[in-house]
Image 1: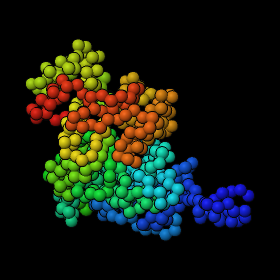
Image 2: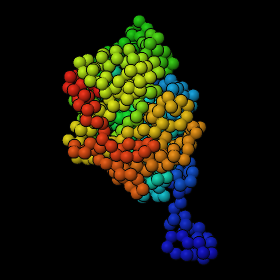
Image 3: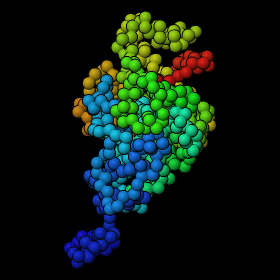
Image 4: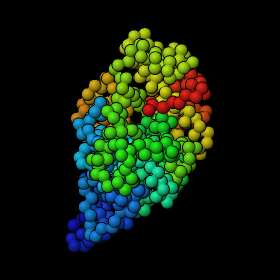
Length: 530
């Protein structure tokens, strides 16, 4: 025989088998790993092994509802990790909604027993020390899951990184603040259980990722929308120190949801306890079923919009109002947004008239409304919608500009910013354009999870975006061979990369727009998409 294994050629078939088994590990060997809680068996396809539904914390059920996550229980024998676990408790729309077709949304069952993560690794051995992408899903802190099809990590992992994504509690299960919860907490804090889930998963990665061939010192946290807000909260939190080295925030930086103070959040929690005109104690609330809790939230809505339970300034994870947005954990960051963020999010979509646009601009911008209308004219209803869309885009870019300008002044690390402009093909593509989150399937190179009519150009864009993101995870710099140069955003050069049907560097905004938005901010106005 002429089979070569290791450093020598052996002519005994038995010796060949033995040497191959010990000296030349195959990809399939990492289908079996041992982590701190026990042994795992994964699923290998091609050059990537997936470990799905791995517990990183105990189920937050019963008396553990609305408590920080506890360590997962150890198990005997080898645990099969070849299927996704349940998504965290939430309302689901499996057929999708608006521009978000099935591949964008949660499929399958939901449960409060949901604190599991998923790992995709291309490592040949546990000694490979590959960099790690840690993905945090969006969904307004009310929905989302690591099993959403477009988040599949196999294609990115095949490019030489490990991909981890994580379930975290959402809605009232993840973000209820309440005086009784605060009183029972050793940290005298309540409300950020979903963020504490993310923190627990990062600590799990720190301890265990080497078993999958990963480098615990080269973890990039990444997320989109609410996931991007979570990235910034982790950057701001002293509790997350040392758990990551890089950060990616898609839709975005400076554009996140408002973070209420603890007193305000506790007041909402008390309203939740009184939702049916009968005050329930914390013990009584913990005794309710998930269905009863969901019905209670619906009662608070009273037929209107449900109350938003999300991150709060709790005095612990986020110590104070000044800590929100603080650069506590200084890292390189890649950040950006889509060109048509609001087409799927705005209730005014398709209903904008000349009169309604003028009224909205006047109500929002006050004394500088005439300057805004000069930049975004509305001579007829069609132009009114076009201007509303452009104004939302430029508000987001201005918000990102002011955030990046301040960060560039204080950070020791680079910023890479982008604007995604490609309209994903599919239902109502012309209507929605480059809608909120539409870059994600290109970043993860998961176009095949969809039935959309993708063309060769879409495949090329997916290769381009996934390469930029993988390069950043590996080196803290998205640039690489056969890619257009991505400039750093600096105090002197306020350039971003336009990604889409054409890729080019460009100023973030014209000077006139920046000047108008700056006057608006100085007058007390707040920028942001949401």
